[in-house]
Length: 168
Image (cartoon, rainbow, N blue to C red; front, side):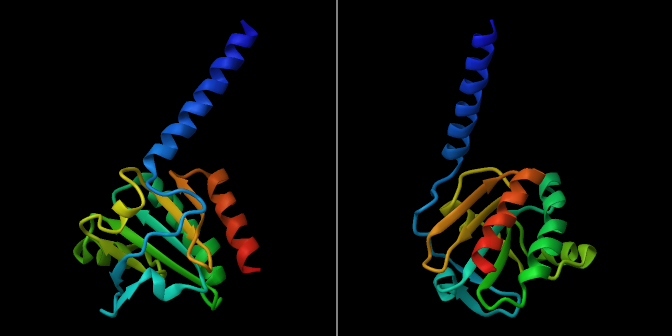
């Protein structure tokens, strides 16, 4: 019985990992799909503009409870720490949300990191099919070095480790 239980646990973990991988359209080691976006100042950028920097891309929605747990940590433990580091950029994209939803959310929360609209999932759909929050870390060469889906304290701590190793 004990071995059957251990087998079942191993199977469920493997199944869960496989499910997570199916949710992604990219994998660690891939070149990050390029995309264009408009900053709050109306300037048009694309991911390639940030080659030579470590870029953290976060996908969230204002209505998403796990996202609301994660974003205060993004502010305090990532953005406040690395915002003056010339080798780092952070972009948080509101999946299926426009400025009409994002501006009041930014004002209410007081977040100072860049929160930008991805109204039609044009950016999100290059990386995944469903599920938020998501984090993607792109290295200086444009390769994906970290992916996470959902929010747990343990997973967020792994994200912090990845950033710390690259930026310190």
